[in-house]
Amino acid sequence: MLPSSLFVLASGTIFDKRYQSPKITNLTGNLILPGTSQISFYGNAISHIYAGYFRNLSNLVRIDLGNNKIADMDDYSFVEVPTVRFLYIKYNKLSIIREHQFSGLHNLEQLYLFSNDISIIEGKSFKDLKSMKTLDLQRNLLSTLREHQFVGLSDLVNFYLQQNQINVIQDYSFKHLISVKILDLRSHELSTIHEHQFDGLTNLDYLHLQQNQIRTIESYSFKNLTSLKTLN
Image (cartoon, rainbow, N blue to C red; front, side, top):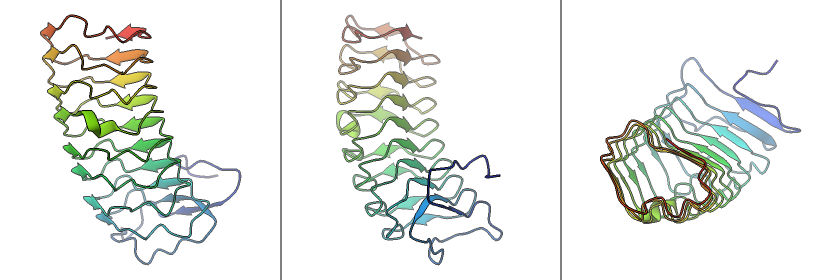
C-alpha cells in the first residue's frame, strides 16, 4: 500500500525520500530517474533549492518539499519541469517570494506555501501560473497586499491568506483574481475596509473576514461582489 501522503497516477514512478535518516540536507546526489511522476522529500533538512536540479523529468506532476528548512530558492528553480501540477513547500523558512522563482510552471494547479515566514511577495511573482486553481499562503508574515503581487492568477479559485499579519490591503490588490470563489482573510489586523479593496472579485462566493479588528467599512466596499453568497 502506498503511503497516504502520496497519490497514484495512471502511470509513472514515485521517488519517495521522506523522513530519511540521516536527513537529506542537499538535493545534489539524489538521482531521479526519467519517467518519475511524483517526488517527495518531505520531512528532511533541505535548506536551499538550486536551479537545474529538476531536469529531464518530462512526466513530473507532483513535488513535495514540505517540512524542510528551505530558506531560499534560486530563480527559475522549476523552469525545466513545466508539467508539474502540484507543488508543496509548506512548513519551511521562506521569507520572500521573488519574481522568477516560479517561472515556467504554466500547468501548476495547486501551490502550498503555508507555515513559512513569508513577509514579501515581489510584484508579478506568480505571473506564469496561468493554470493555478489553489494558492495557500496562510500562516505567514505578510502585512501588506499590493496590486501587482497577484498578476497572472486569472484562473485562481481558492485563495487562502488567513493567519498572517495583514493590516493594509491596497486598492485593487485583487483586481486580477477574476475567477476566485473563496477568499479567506481571517485572523489579521485589518481595521478599515476601503471602497476599492475588493474590486475585480466578480465571481467571489465566500469572503471570510472573521477575527480582524474592523471598525470602519466604507460605503460601496462590496458593490462589485455581485456573486457573493457568504460574508463572515
